[in-house]
Image (cartoon, rainbow over all chains, first blue to last red; front, side, top):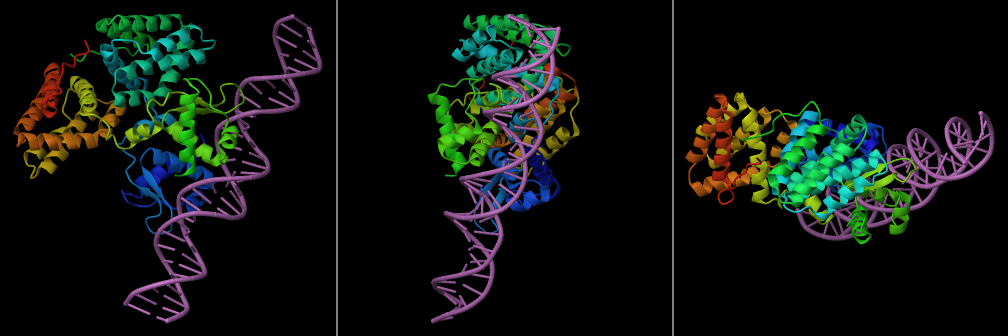
Length: 223
Length: 223
DNA sequence: GAACGGTGTATGGTCTGACCATATTTGGTC
DNA sequence: GACCAAATATGGTCAGACCATACACCGTTC
């Protein structure tokens, strides 16, 4: 784990332990670095992440408002989702699968023409020279499908799950021993969408995810 | 504007200008710093932001996969992405409603006993002395339902939408002029869940959200 | 020629120490 | 008491160094 990630965790814990609320101020960068026994660079990288997550806002100067000010409690916000990009949260395969089924079935039912990114990813998987390369385009394929459905929030959620998608895809390729079945699934999804066959597209997505998450597949109908 | 922010803008422009796609690699930190005439620290802070946004992933080592690898095109500008992550103010009612329907219908279909928090919220709404108080417990009711379904990721998404839920609920109460219809919906949902009537619970949730988001309600079936 | 193994090297990760810009605090002056 | 200037604390930035890692390269061996 990189240093700034441990700093992130410590700051988070500190916020919870000290009961800091919106408007409160974090210790200065130098003080934080000394307390956590890390360099100021690492503290700054952590603060940049927190800033990106909308948790703190940095102010220069000297007054009581200077420093990293808490502008949002780190719990219960989109921060939870974005933190997934950094691998700070562990999600079960069950949770990831259910969420993917929900988002990707919904997307497949609504997208009526395959976006260019999806078609390109399909072709790239055909000529992938390694499992890693295949998986990269695999994820791109699914993200492109979701993006095409036009709900930015759902797209953001799927992107936030990227690490979980990658590790599962790598595991699936290793287990299957080849990528043929997965690619056949992709082609079926692509064809159905191009044909405007919503119901078939949804079924294809469902079958594909069932193959990618064996042992977990349930009926996913919500009436 | 801070240096790392200009670096962000330059990287964003470079991705667009060079037509970089998923899997492509950005120049190394040292090279980037030299090209942009900034320190490596500033480049690193920018990369940390991009990583948090899920745009790049850093890999150590020496191979062609080392360095900052593009894992997602920043569709739209980075500023848009940041805004999306911070405020959700750009989120349309349509996107929020679709996401809520997805999550809450799914939850309603799976929860077979109303959790205490849900029952308490229902009672609290009955005795609420102001629209604000009503809305607070209203949100708690929906969050409790989702929490009971046991998928932390979906719970996080709904919580992330909290601000949007509040503003919509306030608007709904103002428009209706009373809270009776909304509360009747809540009671119907609660009763169905207590009775283990999954199908009825899903239908009740759907009807409730249709009332809360008038003019937007579609059929939401995904086969 | 192919397979193996050690070394070189480029990369991200981290640290140190310094200086700058800014804004408040402090304290002296009128 | 009001005002102004110096001291100071803070974030922002930079330069340079070293480490760990993982591929690239090249010689050795079979």
